[in-house]
Image 1 (tube, one colour):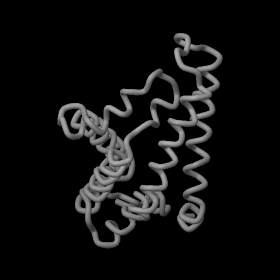
Image 2 (image 1 turned 60 degrees about the vertical axis):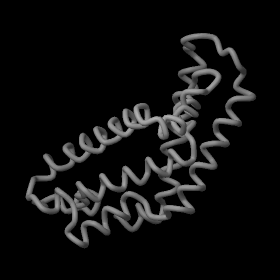
Image 3 (image 1 turned 30 degrees about the vertical axis):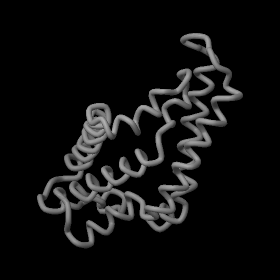
Length: 169
């Protein structure tokens, strides 16, 4: 199964992103919370252009994915959940919670540290607020964010659920 996952990983990620983005955009169009001050015809191409730059930069600078990094860590026995024996029903939710906590702490850090805030404020400086605001980040912030996520993945790595080892400790 994981061979298919790796072979189609970019398409799967793009498909999930596009599905969520379109669903949120339709929801936003059907039930707007406030009128748009600046038209989508100008903002959306700009914000989505930033997303395209971010994706290309990450793919060029960091061609490994989080799953690939998890496999690397697993092969070397690195990571909290490779060092302590826990059932998958504990380690998987714990991994999700720890990764989510790391992302939250990263966000707090990007607000608190002046040099990081200068990067992060690109997200907050959007001239209006809609679905594209959530994906508008400075390219350097995206690279730093991916590196932080990679560090957390290596620290907590547990890959058996993707490999299909239902009886793994």
